[in-house]
Amino acid sequence: MAKSVKKKGSTKVSKVLTSPFSIYWSRINYLILALGIILSVLGDSLISIKPWNSTSALYLGPVILILVYLVFFPLSILFRKKESSPGQEPK
Image (tube, rainbow, N blue to C red; front, side, top):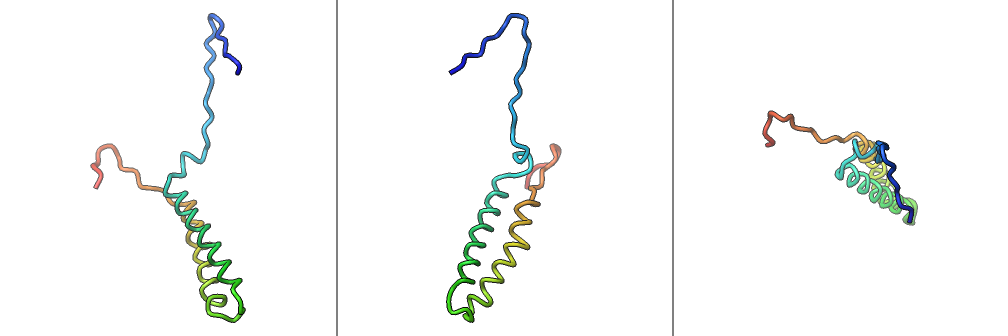
């Protein structure tokens, strides 16, 4: 391991790079995204069930996939928890 040597009179400050997504994404965003991924796998597996004209292949699988692509994935990206201002008490 390399040691960092500090020279006299040196005022070099190293910056710690953080992910730009840590500002916007919270734990709930990751949970919604994980739920969307799980539901998309479920929808794909329901569509692949044989026979092709079963209820799950024709109705349940596509409905689940439409919900995932139109609700869960955009919600995971766009959801932001409301921040309370310093003067207000949380409810």
